[in-house]
Length: 455
Image (tube, rainbow, N blue to C red):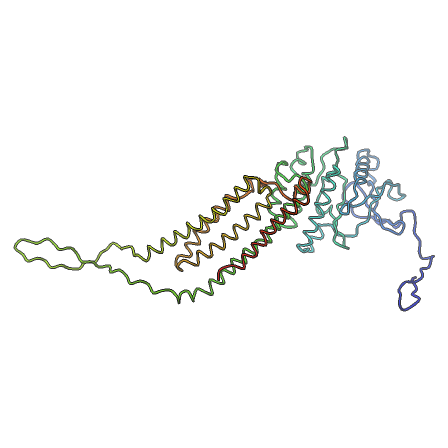
């Protein structure tokens, strides 16, 4: 009992008889487990733990005893906030020889997904999973059974805890290397019984990412799930960098959409005024012409000159001028886009642009300027020619978009990642900060250009 002695503080005296901790495990509460192991929630020293031991039918089997020892030795190497902690191996009166692990009060990722978590929480979960995988892989440990039911999310703080390393492996082990997996998340090399590496876990992560974000990171998912390992990402850090790049592009896209929407509203507002201000059409050229004098007939009077209707249409001077204006506008757009993209490609060839973040941010800026120019040229044309010009401008736009991509057909990038080079220690923080600032400056310039949209 806690007895408050005054009205100010809630602290008080605790009766010694009511405070007791045991050095032995007590309060055994069995937890569900589908594998060859038993799980039991226990209490010691006033704290909760989990004991993991073999089920009765496996206790005398040396293979399963070896697997339990292997899991213990692997997990004792790991000390990461997003990996369940192991404290030791002990003999318990109820559970027998057991791995002593931390107790995690939480839901499996499988259960959490049924509650429809927010986008931000799902992003946080992905980042923490990748962080944990990067740490494990740095210790030469492959999980081999990554799936939503082996990922716990704590109720307090929504933090990731990767559990169940019973099927994990490491290069230091020469035995107990049998194939092991959950089929729905197994990479092709697992199913084929081949030697595995960290990219096997990244394949499983791709499956999980696709479940968390069915339509948000399609390019990242596609590369994670490549059947050939050499076409996947090489590390968890690469996956995280690719996800960050996708998010950056998604942040820029709304600005472009907003700009196009603003143009649409402006055009809708000024079209009536423009119709009122249009000059009257020039008078039509007569479509009737005097026929030449007919030949004279001998002995008869000359037939008088008459008017006849010309059946072939005559090109009007006004229409010809409009056609030339349309052609000139398209030619102007093509010339200006070529003029903007040629320096970009030259800078890439000369090594002044070495990383894909630089290239993509500069390309986004050029396309923003192109959108601005299309709107300006379109506004200068007669109303009846604007839809035609838009179609032709779209063709020019798509031609540049397809020819200036740094994504290969197999889903790989043809330029290295600035973020990866920094995290791998290939460039200094000063260089990274400088180049990253250039990319951000391009983004800010895109936002500034929207304010200069023609009105």
